[in-house]
Length: 169
Image 1 (cartoon, rainbow, N blue to C red):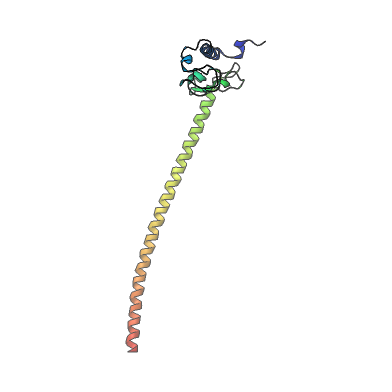
Image 2: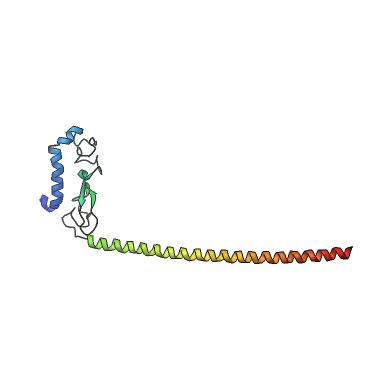
């Protein structure tokens, strides 16, 4: 048979022991309601340590991964000892390698790639805005030029009409 210590890390065993102590002698949990009845009676979830009724309520129903080279985080107790490495430091399983440094490096590379993409996007937006402003300036210049030509042409047309009217008269 597989011993309990080979199944979970010491940290996970301590956590399970804490939960078990709540079931065996639930001092504050009894004040809230029945223990392990699949109904979350206590605001802190202490009455349901072995059920999922209070899943995610607080640290009592979660396992904390320190993840030394990365950010620490909580994972559901159901993920401890399930042979799947959920913590990059491997603290939730017996045979998980510490991959925190690699995960941190990948995350930093992804973050840098996003920052580069943002920089390129801002530069492209700036170029498009400048081109738009230049286009607006050129359009205004063309409009002003066309309006000046129109004024000259209208004046010439009035002169031709006036000459035509004098000839007719």
